[in-house]
Amino acid sequence: QLKLVESGGGLVRPGGSLRLSCVGLEFNLDDYVIGWFRQAPGKEREGVSCISRGGGYRGYGDSVKGRFTISRDSAKNTVYLQMNSLKPEDSAVYYCASTARTGFSCSRERQVYANWGQGTQVTVSS
Image (cartoon, rainbow, N blue to C red; front, side):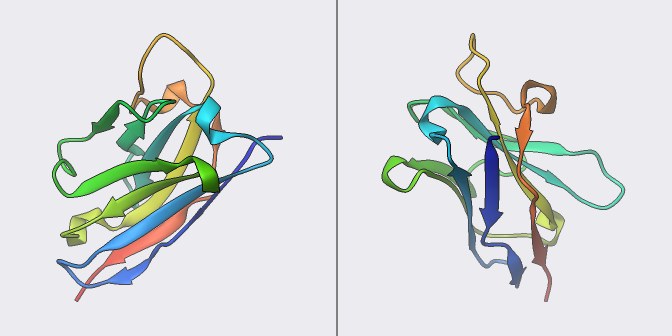
């Protein structure tokens, strides 16, 4: 069974930074397109960022463009989401997800992804 484990969430002040990690257990993340999503209470799950299999293509939602960076570390079988200049509206549970589907570089559409992690909470507050 493909298992994704997120970590790195926590409480941070506005303007601060966090780095989220998504580790693949017993499967190679390089073989999959990876997406980061977030869901705040009462809101739909939102596609934040995605990265192609080779890492050559990276996509970002408008609300995080210029502040968040997605990357891969193949040696550690990990995908990161570096989050800078955090705002209170970034507070949510963050999930990573994987898909084996082909025909696109990456996607921020949740229905594309079949495998999800358990999520990690990010709270931005003073």
